[in-house]
Image (cartoon, rainbow, N blue to C red; front, side, top):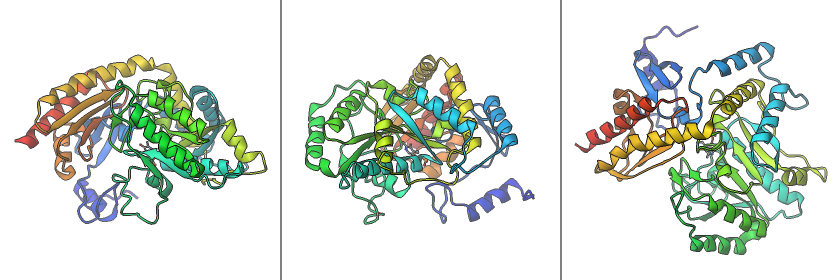
Length: 431
Ligand code: PMP
């Protein structure tokens, strides 16, 4: 039964009942009731339309309510929405695995589906530990990772998140202690810092007998700081990992499926990781699904001596989610991706650069379909969120970062409006 309440009553009930991401139940940030979303627009219950600068946490790459994905899911619902993946299989999952293997870097050949990005990371870490266990190295069970990373909110994923942003103090004693290195120097074109690599080499040399894997977000560190770095570091880190028997794990959950201008951020470098995690935009942001993809070495290393991989979520390989992902990937294949994203990048730079004139702006940077305005002092989310809505845009900043990751269907004019809104809001706070 619909609740038959006014919008104000619904929002009040939401406040009383619902815990939203990273919020307090006693001092919740404002939440806006939406009634429709289409293309790059979100419509609120009061009929106000907002231009979407977030792609719903970077996942809705083709825009909302896309006829191709709608159709694929409706057709799948009529066949079956879910079956267990233990003992049963189905074409949507097989087709999806086949496409993923084709579009990911060569050598990645085996796919494990799970429900969310965090779980895909748990699975990747588990795979690495199980691989070394099977290889007779049970001491290799810790991980090395750069600071400023973000890999999810479950416990193992949290243990490899930035120790400050990831609130390691709050969970001290419950998180595995991992090896942290400084985050890579920023700037896609910044020359490689040999001293930085030498520090990593030192740490690995000392601790490699305990280290199962090196996990990182390739080229862009996302929720841990929106930092871009030179892809050549990835080539060099891969060599270090090979020299010291460490598996390399790329978390492409935020960067995968075109966001950086190539299908995967990994395509900016010349190497292939041992394990890759994807999620978010995998289904065009329609429904939750993630995958951990690995090579024969890891998959057969775990399995050949009679081992089984110890993970199996209830909704593993959900057919509805796989059908959305198959439709999303066929849409992606129909785009001239590099040109599309280059155009978004050019327009993001144009529209954000005017913020340079503002006092509280420390840095502006764009890479692919990602535009970042870094402030000198952090924003107050309670205050800033309604200001963006007043400007007719949906932008959700955090800390010192106001950023845009729009859907790929965004127009140049809409990007200009998003940039104007950011300028106006920062300027109004400076008065
Ligand atoms: N890894 C990265 C790089 C992410 O950006 C995120 C989510 N922001 C995750 C993992 C976790 O994914 P999920 O929220 O789907 O659990």
